[in-house]
Length: 532
Image 1 (tube, helix red, strand yellow):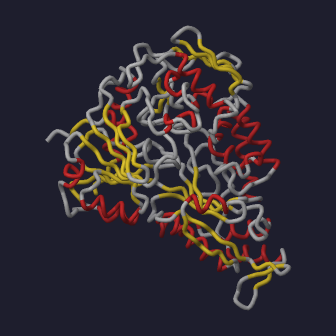
Image 2 (cartoon, rainbow, N blue to C red):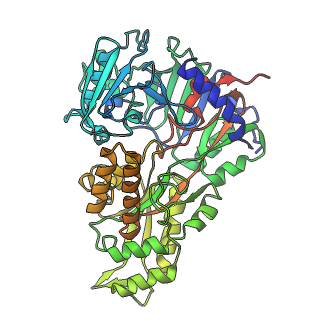
Image 3 (tube, rainbow, N blue to C red):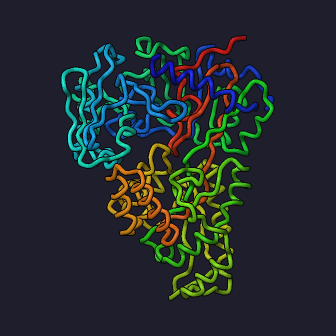
């Protein structure tokens, strides 16, 4: 049984447990009408990638559709072979990973895939001239070399326990991408890969269209045409789904409920590591004050956010690790306590003014909080956070904007942000919290600087001992509880509404980034038409 076949079987087995029925709609046959053909699917996603080049960061967590990695995840998030014919052979000291490659695989342009493409991909990403914001994720790699046409050997600087998880990263063709400027070439918008789908068009801000790869090594998909419609506004996405323009879409809980009971559609819920948090910029006179940070972390009512904003589809967040994860540090939960929050501020000299807003040394306890326009979940979280903060005497002015407008302000302005990766705690904690990455694009947006956290993160990623790693990540979470550079609010379950005409729909435990690769279409290449 191939890895793709195994994935399909696992997906089918889980589908019955994960699928919940969903609301009669104005166009019961709308999904078929939307796509124009029984073998086509139109999906509504909230965001599109900036690039489709793996060399610049696209698809680094897997499920990239146009590409494959050496490994992939199955429905239970366990690693399975993809372009590698088996899981890697790991040396006793944990410093050498050897991958034997699947033979007979070709890129969608017909050129053969080989070890040189793997070496090219990893070496290019690690090149200092390559503008890949996730380069630090491969810090452990000392060398990558090929042995013949079908073997690749990675040598690590230190025993990096989750390294195999990094090799779901998509492989780019050396014969195309290697002949272009990695940062400016058209490979980022006209990619060629070994994956189940081939990109046929990309209208920025509107849609991406893909067709099934007839020579795909895992077998040609039954869904022949896949369109990813970029619809940033949640309400518009729900309206287009209801009208039949979309076959499927991700929706916030209140909008997904509008489809409850629809016999033509199915609702799926995916648990996730996806969190929403508020950045507390170090370089702002209010959010940079440790007392204000602790007070806000205590004043926020996380449970109310889960119950009212997510309608139960999630859980309170006290850090990047969900409370039901084995990596969660028990005892770091924070109780909502407005009285305690006020006392923290009083003791630090932040005194209430006539309008109830506090001030200290002539500085008013006020700051802006930006959230992404059209994102209802972020908007709701921002407004709820502002309401909780005001009760403690802190004025938070919520403002909407695009990422282009928000990014230049992140050094001093708070942002309703998000993140989360289920593969390994290193994957998003290092980028989120390491002081050396402060201000590096969307990494460490708050410019958090805690030396104990820096040391623990380094220890955790450099150790192959699970007990050492667990202790280090416990330290990180305890430090965040005492010295919050972010206020974590909720972990969110992702809800999808999908036309009920395909077999094999299921979900994985999902990361923050979802759209092209995550969602019920994570395994769309395995879907089969539902028998009537």
